[in-house]
Image 1 (cartoon, rainbow, N blue to C red):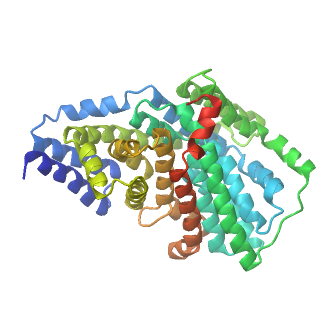
Image 2: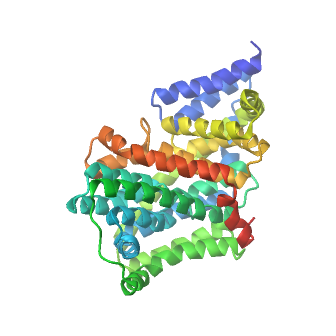
Image 3: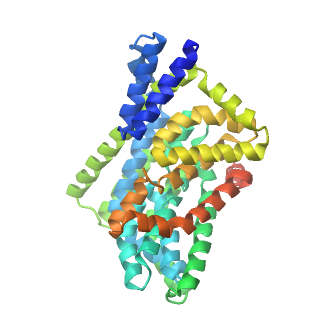
Length: 432
């Protein structure tokens, strides 16, 4: 066995073993990198150098700002307003509260950018509300956790920034614009599934639609929705960079949460910032460790070998796309979202480009794949949060979620095989 192959086995094998042993992901990435460098006879001084290099990016400065914006707006009392807005729009349908849940997640996701935050915030309100109106508790939880993945696609999503930085040369503004239609496709797919199940179980309708009520609720929610507009218009219009827009959005979110909606006191603001630091520390150490891991992958020519392996199975574009999706879905079952983006992008993006997938489209595919992974055992963070919020056994929630997995896979296939779903809006706005 040649030294390069041995080092590759040590790198990937030790990483997978530690993942299966439930090591914290940052430790698994870091230890496997150290073992690989030692096997190659490399000086370990290069490890901290690569870690610093991985976080030395102006674009990555947007990540802490977007996380802070999401926490401030999520804690600032906007959940009720977005739920009321969604209810005025789609609550009249059969299974109205399920539809409200899905649409509210689309609105809230554009503010929080986090499926976990969406599930915890909206789920704590909507799941009890749905149960009180006669909806099955497991169905209510399934709707909540699956619809929360819309927030990963709808800008501003810090995971999009991480992908853009990892892929290199990708416009954050184009990625932001690319997420709107796929997010809407996912929402429609989930609404169709919810409607079918609601008819089957005779779940109730809400109040009839009223244009007056809709505009009233829109007026109350407009301050929250403007936060997204500030970011997206600013970035796509070239007024400021993603990092600058994120910083402005934090200031805006602080003003709206404290002075307009009055959902936060100054004491609660500091508590929110503490939770931001905790989240950010996890994200940044992952980015740093993954940068060193990625260097090892490059030195061992793993991306090229992976591309050759996948194309050796089949050169058919359809088969390759299905294989790419399958690989990311499997990774999503055992890893969290950020590590998958950081580690798999350098390996799989060249394969995707080789079969004609645009890097922007592949970014959307990867984010949605990872979102599905957040809902699957054994490492489904959003699945765990939803089960905890609803106080329901995880296995029953998984069973209720099965029809929605189908809806999400349909949306994923559409996004994978119809490039314009991801690329039309960036082209229309000139972001691409």
